[in-house]
Amino acid sequence: MTERILGVLGGMGPLASAQFMLRLTLLTDAERDQDHVPAVLWSDPRVPDRTRGKLSGGDDPLPWLQRGIAGLRQAGCGAIAIPCNTAHGWYREMAESAGCPILHIVDAAAADLARMGIRPGRIGLMGTQATLNMRLYQERMDSLGWDCLTPTQAQMDRNVTPAIGLVKANRVAEAFEPLAEIVNDLSQRGATAVVLGCTEIPLGILAGPAEHLRAPVIDTIDALARVSIAWARGSA
Amino acid sequence: MTERILGVLGGMGPLASAQFMLRLTLLTDAERDQDHVPAVLWSDPRVPDRTRGKLSGGDDPLPWLQRGIAGLRQAGCGAIAIPCNTAHGWYREMAESAGCPILHIVDAAAADLARMGIRPGRIGLMGTQATLNMRLYQERMDSLGWDCLTPTQAQMDRNVTPAIGLVKANRVAEAFEPLAEIVNDLSQRGATAVVLGCTEIPLGILAGPAEHLRAPVIDTIDALARVSIAWARGSA
Image 1 (tube, rainbow over the protein chains, first blue to last red):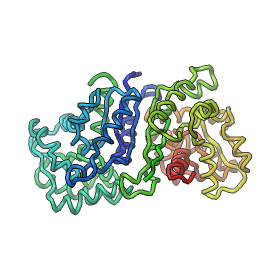
Image 2 (cartoon, rainbow over the protein chains, first blue to last red):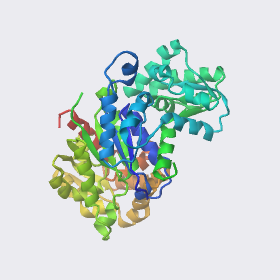
Image 3 (cartoon, rainbow over the protein chains, first blue to last red):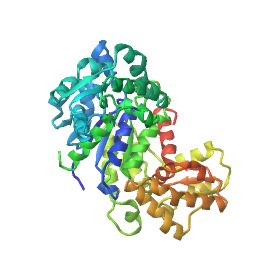
Image 4 (tube, one colour):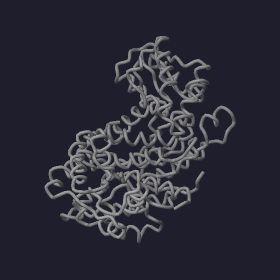
C-alpha cells in the first residue's frame, strides 16, 4: 500500500485521460482495491486547444494548466502525470511553479522504446502539428540514438490531424484507418517502431485490427502509466 | 460548454471509476474537447472495504468517503457521483455533510430501467453481499413496481462474491462466466432484466460474449454516467 498520491492533469482529451486511469489500474499488480495507486484526476476539457495556443495565437492554456496543478497539489498529490503530449510544450513553466515532480511523457516514451528493445536508428513519430513543430520529441530521441521520421505535411493534413479530431468527437473507430496508414508508411520509410506521441492516437489505433499494423507502436498513455506506477511504488 | 464541474468519488474499485470516466466521455454528445463535462475524479482505493465495514465490523469507510467529498468540494465540484453501489450504504451521512447533491446510483438504475421500457414485475438484482443485505435497491424498486429477485446464498458465495474479487484483482475476463451464469438463472426464475448493482459486475459482464446473456442488463456505471451528464447539462 502506498502513501503516494498521483495527480493526473487530464481532460486533454477526456477520453485519453479516462483511458490513462484504466491503464494505470490494469498495469498495476494488485489483488484488491487497497493495492491500487491512489490518484486524483483533474479532467478539465475546457483548457484552450494546445495546438492552436502554440501555432496560431489561440488562447493561452498555461493558466488553465497551472490551475489544475494547483488543484491537484491541494488534494495532496506528490507528482503530476499529464496524459497530453502537446501540453508538454509548457513543461518548463509548469515544472517551475508545480512544487512537485512532473513525470515527462517523452522520457516515458523513451523508457518504453528501451523496454521493447528498439535499437538505435530510425523510428517513426506521430503527434499533433504543434508537438511536431515544437520538436518536443526530436532532440531528446536524437540524444538517445533514435532518429525521428515524421509524417509529411500532406499526411498530417489529410490523416493525422483529422483523426485526432475524430477521437475527440468520440468517433474512435473511424480514426483507425487514417492512422494505421501513416504507421505503415513510416514503417516502409524505415522506422523500426512508431511513437504515438499524441494520446488520442493510441485510442484510434486500439479501435482497429492490430494485425493491420506493420510496425510495433509505443502507446504514450501506457508509457506514462508505467512511470506513474513506478513513482507510486517509490521505485522512480 | 458547461460551468458545472462533476465530482466523482471513485477508487471503489479503481477500474470501475476509470470505466465511469470513459463512459461519461463516450456518452456525451461532443465535437471537441471543450464540449465534454469537466470532472474531478478522487480515486482513493485505500478506502476500507465497504462490505466488510457493513457486515463484519471492518474499519469504517465513512471518514474516508467524507474526506474524498471534501476534496472534491474544494476543487469546485457542484455535485458528486459515486460509482460504487455499496458505498451508498452511507448515503444519508454523506449527503448530510456534502453541501451539494449526491446523485444516487439506485435512482440512476431506476431511470435506466424505465428508459429501456422494462415493465413492472420481476427483475433480477446482483450486487455485493452488503448491498443485498442492506436492501439498498429493494424498497426503492418495490415502490416503482419492480420486484427484485436476488441470487441464492450459495450463488453469492460461489459466483458473485468471488467474481467481484476477480475484477478488483484485474482478472476481468475470468469474471464473465460465473456472473453470466447468475444473470441467466435470474432470467430463468422470471426476471425480465437484471440490475448489475455493483460496479465491478458490468466490467466482468462486458469482458465476455454478450450473446451468452439471456436477459437485458442494467449497467449501473452507464446509468450513473447518464444522470451525471444530465446534471452537467443543467437538465437534472
